[in-house]
Length: 254
Ligand SMILES: NC(=O)c1ccc[n+]([C@@H]2O[C@H](COP(=O)([O-])OP(=O)(O)OC[C@H]3O[C@@H](n4cnc5c(N)ncnc54)[C@H](OP(=O)(O)O)[C@@H]3O)[C@@H](O)[C@H]2O)c1
Image 1: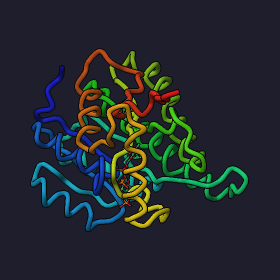
Image 2: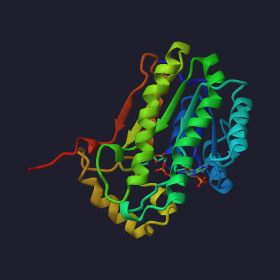
Image 3: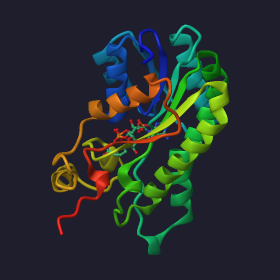
Image 4: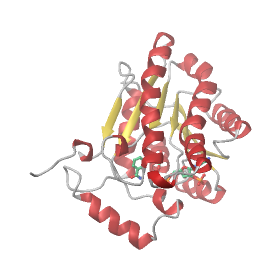
């Protein structure tokens, strides 16, 4: 396994949730991590907790100039190199199948898929120099059907397909590509989408805990450990790794 010491890593959406926990873990392991997001105050809070190994850059992943600034900031913070890109930024998109609106679906794919594809594309020359890695954050929504969440699930399915083809294309250049499929973790994801109040979200996480074979929801740090594995493991590429407490098994006590 490659050491994370002195790695330069860009984590999009690092101002909260799983992205913030990735930044914290990777910095603990000696990496220099740049986190991005639209809300500066969230980024500043994470940086204040982690310290100088963590660098922040405000920006929207759907904007080309912001994506370039994220890369440039990471390169500057990381001594001119990039060892790994973690495409973590995303939103939850729920809409019943008989109520689709085109603008909503376009926004879902723009944010959750196209932005990650374009940022990864721009990162390739730098990752080739370090024989680095790209990690996408998928979801257990491709393993289990959650009615109402088809826009979100399809964006995450796209990332799984992308992971395989990108791994095949970039393997000869020694760039590894992987995808993590997390189970449920209590974060801002559903709250930011305006779907539930904090109380409703808490009740839903309690309800979903029993769907996991291990009987509980996970933590952002547990997901970060999976991301860490895909960055460090030198003979692993093209995989979709379920870090999900067993929810993807679809356990059914018949
Ligand atoms: N929590 C779960 O149960 C779960 C399960 C499976 C997969 N996931 C995936 O895990 C990843 C992290 O989500 P999370 O649960 O940690 O939720 P989260 O706390 O809401 O994190 C998502 C981050 O993405 C950023 N973001 C969203 N749109 C952006 C944009 N246009 N430009 C830049 N940044 C943007 C948000 O920051 P700003 O709003 O400040 O930009 C936010 O910090 C996502 O890919 C999510 O789909 C989560």
